[in-house]
Image 1 (spheres, rainbow, N blue to C red):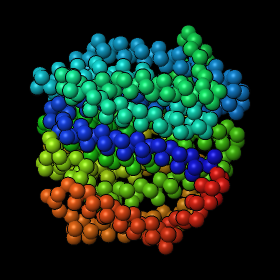
Image 2: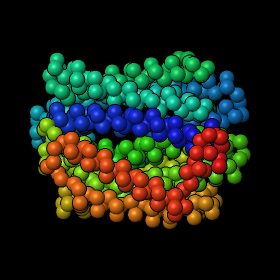
Image 3: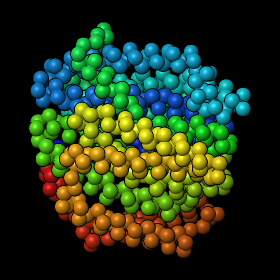
Image 4: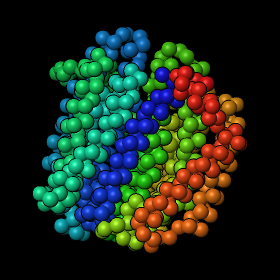
Length: 516
């Protein structure tokens, strides 16, 4: 399967998941709004998700997939299965222990994760209670990350990419079915998170068994391969998870700004997560096992080609998305969330945050595309150095900007720090000779920029001419759909005419399943 087809598979399922996520967030916004209850749930939801992305998706995948790919290429499938089984047993042991410790220490841990909640005892207690319900999700979803890594290394992307869909279905079902019988709608959502972890785990167990890679439980045992995995995980926890750590810092400091600030940033980030997930995470997910197996097979030339195509696809899709969100931040939030407990003030605050976040969107995607260039070469130390520097920069910028711009200063600091992260990763790869722009990429980048700028101008004039914040809901939805469709058409035509991409080339690649 070609890189383009692999990305398309992951993107398709991710798009479906993110659309369901929007349905979920629309329901949450309508029932919880952007006040104290919403803030408490979002912190409880981010708590296990932070550790999931560091232990599971981030550090673990970055260290595990290259080692598993090496076993498959050089030692055979039996050795790979044995390594995966040992890794699974250790991962469950570690995450299970962490869950137990955090459950005990939860009241004190909340002082770290959301110190501003301490001023409101009712909000603080609710956040602690919800976090205790959601945190066991970490153990199940970390195991899901391992099995997803197995499936991706085997170039079977569908099951792993579909797993987040289960989460959104569970949360929607919990909000509609459990909310009437739980203490608050936030409690229903928390139980939905816990149930989703079990459901995703069972789905990946079945998927691995179907492809002949059943992972059998064994007593945890540390051997040289597990030691190597652990050694590589430690720097990867920060290097791969710098974006999530930045979001955690944002949440901690946002809790000090005002009531609702955590929710404004959450909703804005959720919107930018659509292109980030569909493009950035999809490319990174497909690129890491592809590069790992190419480099393990001593095919550096093809690996360089894959890296260039990953960057090209990322910029082709991300730059117009970033400009569109920057131009249309307020209307997008207005259409998606302004109903029920989510009013005009929440729309204004969230829309402005989305506009600022949009500036950093291309960099966030590039980090996902460039990081596999290090992980596939079994280098997790360099990203940690870059990650620490960017986190320090993020904190400094927040401290400087937050007193002047409130939650917008937090969003701006995040966007700037992620650009520094992406630039640093690219520069070091280039200096090492592991990243050189080929003629095709160098030719197309400026053309993508011009096509995106033309689309942004068209959207600007369309919003100015046709948009009304207080129009009927159905009128706003139709207007937004027409404007977005028109903007996509402008970009597609401009990209084709300027030579930023070739539709016939993409079509041929998808059909043949090999690089065009």
